[in-house]
Amino acid sequence: MNVTSPSIPSLANLKADFLASIVVFLVALPLCMGMAIASGLPPASGLITGIIGGLFLGMIGGSPLQVSGPAAGLTVIVFELVRNGVATIGLIVLLAGVMQMAAGILRLGQWFRAVSPAVIHGMLAGIGVLIVASQFHVMVDDIPKGSGLENIVSIPDAVIKGVFPLDDESKHHKAAMIGVLTILVIVLWKALAPLRLQVIPAPLVGVVVGTVTAAVSGFSGGNNGILCVTLGDNLLNSIALPTLDGLAAALSWPIVLAAGSLALVASAETLLCATAVDQMHNGPRTRYDRELFAQGAGNLVCGVLGGLPMTGVIVRSAANVQAGGKTRLSAILHGVWLLAFVMVLPGVLEWIPTASLAAILVYTGYKLVNLRILDALWQYGKGEAFIYLATIVGIVTTNLLTGILIGVGLSIAKLLHTFSSLSLRLQVDPEANRTTMLIRGAATFIRLPKLARALESVPATSELHVHFEDLTYIDHACLDLVMNWEKQHAASGGTLVIDWDTLHARFRRPGRRAHENGRQKSTLKLPKSVAGH
Image (cartoon, rainbow, N blue to C red; front, side, top):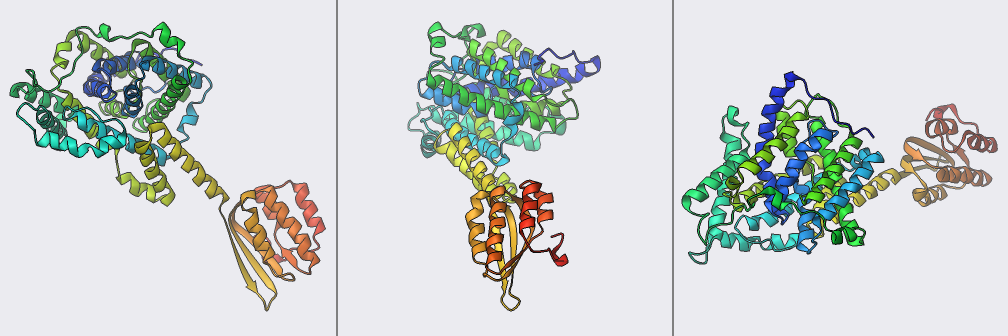
């Protein structure tokens, strides 16, 4: 596989990439920290992943304008691992990266795109529900309760803490005010800001307003102040290299299963994001196997350095395209700005209230739960809408991987039903001693009993005319049944009128010789009135 570095962009694109990188940096900065907090890990873990996603993935990735970093879809998995006491997050991320690299080498990139849109939208909506449910508690400086259902059920308690403080020393209502203010600023900025200022990301404006308000009001100071970001004096101190004991546990079944789940979700989210980004611009298209390999290499590095897992992120990628990014240099530079900001001005980040970051994620989760997509899926059938809702319910009530598998399983079941659905209608004319059979759908061995019952209900001496214009598929088992039934029907004084030549030419089942043998055994000549049916 060719994973060599891409050529340097021309001078004509440098200005566009430089300006786009600043916009992407401003979008990524609060989101990297917010994703880490949502995962139950220090904000520095998210910043490490954002930096690697820019500097490293930007150089070797297969999707020129896609931006990688910590993503909402992976926070649910990581949070579950942290909540269950798994201390080897870095090892799991490392192993997931190795799996992704292997999948890229085996050219499995295109296969990760073979997922029903109903499952993808259901996955995003399910993730959105879980993010809203957990981060709603963080937005009032409380701790998420555990499972998705527990977080949802306990939301009224969080509202009570945020709206009705039990005493003057309570900080929950202060955090709630900062969180609500952040969301209001995001919404109003998107709706009312002048077009020339829309280049400034709304989440960044919300965080700035929330941070300044908390500082001026005194909410973020003193022993009873609201929680703020904690980074430490040096980002390098946040790097947690894998230990020998951790590496020894790499082959344990729970670790392998967790890594496989992470690799599966990260790969699907990355490549679907890459497909969406390709639709936003007219430049070079994504090389899926290379992108999958690069994502694996990035996660391997993240695992070694103790960062969050990474994936392609649609919000940052869309910002990159909309800001005029032309080459992968914009993604690389955004990683440079992240690294420079964290190394030079870490104290500035520690003024940011966690309630503001949680509010951004609450808003992000709400946007992921796009119920309007339900109407669009309904246009393709009730089955698509059911798969969408079942995926959401599965994710919320069990876990992310199980919910996705439920959606994929239902999609496969729907596919099998569609390709095995067979409609048979008999029209009997006793006076003419004639029966007409209209076949619609797919005649496979699964529906063979249904076809057999329909043939057995034909009167013994009747002339049966078979019309298969709406037949989409027929397999050898059903063809063999019809041919054998013809002989039995002829023995009882009946006849069969069917266009074997057209049936063979259209479906090529079974071979020509078998059809010729069937026709030789039949004494019936096909009437001109049904030829070509």
